[in-house]
Length: 221
Image (tube, rainbow, N blue to C red; front, side):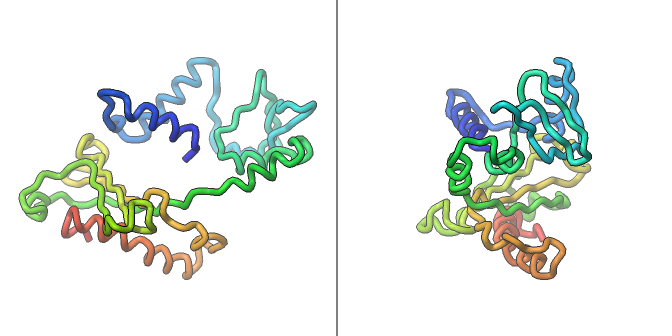
């Protein structure tokens, strides 16, 4: 997640009366609102338009070149919402201040995330949970002595269909479990996603998510 976005989120998060909500219909609701805003002000949203280069002249970015070869000139400025290191790779290296790009590349990256998305049948759910009502959010900590930033020690679980039933078919729920920035990326770096090695590692590293889900919903599997 982009650092500026996280900083803004936490600044808002701790204001009096703030609470965590979900947009109706899921993340599509946010995307559709952004598209409406862009188009309202004369903008255009283009899909499958991979940017391969940010074009620079005279020390200023003046447009982008797409993977297809098409060039798009900016009327006022070029704004990138990609991560810093990804943006740097799009800019001609000779257009950057000497040493500055190297400093940015040396910025340490935070660990990655491990995600589990699934749907489950809600039949008999209350009985399986010992009569408890299903909540939207859960936090599972395996060992408090290790700390919440320890590898595979903390799992966060969201079940947005508790708040918005339209996010899952009738009689079911949608669940998202994840480790928040505690998954070492070096374990995955360079692996071929179509390889047996990758599938084996994914199965192995996802077990902590399944176990956390099982502590909330005993028969989740």
